[in-house]
Image (cartoon, rainbow, N blue to C red; front, side, top):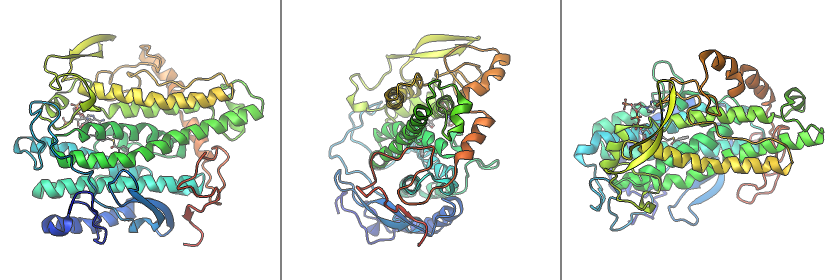
Length: 482
Ligand code: BYC
C-alpha cells in the first residue's frame, strides 16, 4: 500500500498500513475505549447523541481530502493520517543536515523526541476540555458546528501523537499515551503541561480569541515540527496543518463578526465614541475596548507557549535535527546557525535592553517573531472592518513583555504599550489592560443560546459564507430531532 491509500474499513482509518502492523494496531485498539470514555466524560457536554454536520479526513491528497456528513461525535472516524512520504528527503538543518531523514527514532534523541511529542499531544485534549461547555451557549447552529469540528479534529490530532508514541516508543510510549488521557485542563493535581491550556474558555469571545491566537501557536509549532528529521513526525504534522487552517479561520472570522456587529450597532445608535462603553453595552454588543483587552490577554498567554527567549532546549532540538524553524527550507543561511546571532529584548535590572544573542539559543524567540508577523494579519483584517464603519478605533497587539509568565519578562510590570510600571500603577491599571470581572460578567450575560437554523445571537454578525455551500438556514446540528 502506498502512503496516500487510506484503509477506511478498519476501526481506525489510517494510511499507515495498520492492518499488517498487529502490535501497534493492538495497542491502539486497547487505547481506543479509554479515549471514548474520556471523550464522553470531558468532551462536549450535552451534544454527544446529536447529529452534527462534520468534515472527516478521508484522504491525504491536496484535493478532496475530506467529506462532509452528519455524524454523532462519539462515532466520528478519528483516523491516523500522515502526509505522503517525500522520496529522497534529507534532514534540512542541524548537525545531521543533508543526511537521509530517519524512519526510526535515533537512540540518542529518543527522550528529546518523546518529550516534544508528549507536549504537542497534551495540548490537543486540553483544548477540548477547555471548550466543553460552550455548546450550551452557542450563538448559532453554524458556530456550534464549527466548535464541534474544531473539537473532533483536535481529537484526531491527539490520535496522531498517540500513534507516534505507540509505534515508536514501546512501553514508555504506551504509558505516555495513557497519561495524555489522565491529565486534565485546570486540574490542581494533574494539570495540562503548558500554561494557556489550563486557562478556562468561559464564553464564545474567549473561544474565538483562543482559536485565533492559540491555534496559531499550534500552526507555528507544527510548522517547526514538520521540518523534523524524524520523518514520521514531519509527515504527521504536515497533515495536521491541513486541518489547523480551518481552526484559525473560525477564530479570526469569529472575532471579526463580533467587531462587525458592534460597529453596526454603534452606527445605528449614532454612537461615535468607542469608549462610551455603558451606552454601547446597552445595545447588547461587546464594546471595542473590551475586545482589545481580550486580545491583550490571549496574545500574551499565547506568547508564553513559545517558551523562554533564550533556550538550550530549543538549541539542542535544532542541532539534533528534531525541531526546525518556520519554513526552514525556504530560509537562506547555513541551517546550522552556530556562528549566527539574532536580536532579542532582555529585561534586566528594571530595564528593557536590546541584545544580539546566539541564533541557536534564540530559536524560540525567532519562532515567536514569525508568529507575531502571522498574527498581525488578523489584526489588520479586524481593523479594516472598523475602518469600513469609519469608527475611530484601532486594535493593536500588546508589547511582547506585557503580562508574561514565561521568559525574560516574567517578573516585569509592563503596559501593553511597553511602558515599565511600578507595582502600584500596575495594580491600578490592570483592569484597563486585561478583561475585568465586570467585563467577563457582561460578556457572559450575552451568552444566550440560539438554535433556530439560520438565526444568530444579537452580539455577532452572521458569517459571509456557509459551510460546504449549504443554504443560510441549514441545520448544522440536529438538536431537535436526533
Ligand atoms: N508553560 O527551554 P524552555 C497546539 C517549560 S499549541 C509551562 O524555555 P523549550 C494547539 C519547558 O517545558 C502547540 N511550562 O522551553 C493549539 C521546560 O521545562 P523542562 C503545542 C513551560 O523547551 C490550540 C522549561 O519550562 N506544541 O498545538 O525551549 C489547540 C524551560 O523551557 C512553558 C508545542 O508546543 C509554558 N508555556 O520550549 C490545540 C510543540 N514554556 O523540560 C492545540 C512542542 C516552557 O525543563 N513543544 N515551559 O521541565 C516545544 O517545542 C517546547 O517544549 C516548548 C517550550 C515550545 C513548549
